[in-house]
Length: 293
Image (cartoon, rainbow, N blue to C red; front, top):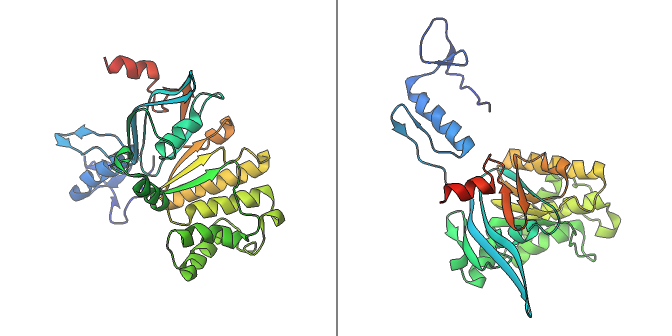
């Protein structure tokens, strides 16, 4: 981890004990430095008798259970899954087919309900929201990118990005401005008038990404966003997602089968049989179960 050193910190020329990385640190900045490190790690710390406040995760899910029922058949898709994601993280969820990756994403985002457990997004418990309130919350707080681009074929790229904004109550003039801004952000300023059939697969996914970012969401959920793309285009799309994550501190949760794509994330959460096998922070499901006893 690297921190930018303020210009007011000067190179030390003596053995001053209050130094860090070759810089003399003013007394008033020591606590700020500790808090900056805390905010980047998302962990609580106690140092020198000073207690820092833990950073609340933007996504928190505890003991999530999801069961799909069809007549006499029950499929236990999630079996007590726990996960936390800090603001600004890019997290990849990986695991074999049928491990519960997409189900977990759908439950975390409120697209699907749960049979047990608690999910909190930015401090709000989503199970306590009405359907209308949850839909409005998703529209304001979240963006979605899927393997299928889900673009309307009769609309241009600009109109596809503009449409959800208009439906959310944004004026047509403002929606058009925002849509153009987001398309330029993903490198499609010269393709705004093109319809999906006139765009490559990678370009169509970029339109879908621009659409997911139109409302400046705090969280972007991406389910196999590169699943329909070749390896070169997949890397281009991931380059874009990583760039957006770093520049705008938006939180990304990405479901993927690709180890190469997963390796671009800040950490990888591994799933198996509806459980979190490893949360990417060095805590396995076995360790988590033992600590809860």
